[in-house]
Length: 196
Image (cartoon, rainbow, N blue to C red; front, side, top):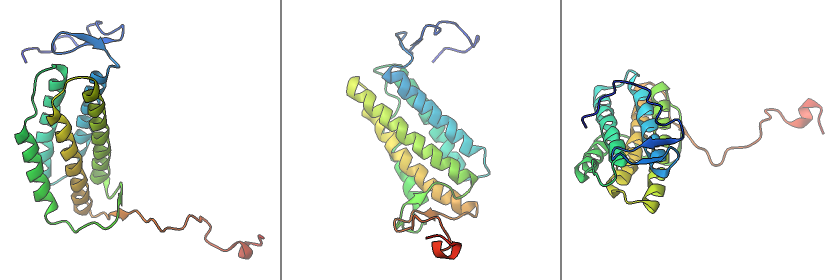
């Protein structure tokens, strides 16, 4: 791409339309722009993970993911262009397998948390799922490459595994969802408080 931003505001979007990389003007709330926006938001949240003190192999992995997400946004802005390839998905799967190899198996769902970086990574995972849903919606209406959708699907799995690793690295604990928990908030029986 040869364009460089020399002037930040252009006023061309003041009436609710924006330009695609192809030069086509579309509504700012179109499905395509919504999908691009969700991918941008995901990239921002991953950036929030990266400002934490995290191990270098996770930093390198997520930094590459940020570049790929920018590529995916560019792909969506130029209908017919394909930036995400099968090799990108395979690379995510290899990272996923490597990071997951030494984690204990899960028997329950995990609640978001575990430490500052882990909690933000959980947010990134949730935003990734939303971006994937928006891409699914777009694909029902317009012609888009399926590779981007698959990439986001694998990425959400990778982010979940990274949440688990980051929680351990930060000395936090994984809070497991308890389906059998009591919903009672009282700590003493009613009769001991003089209630009937």
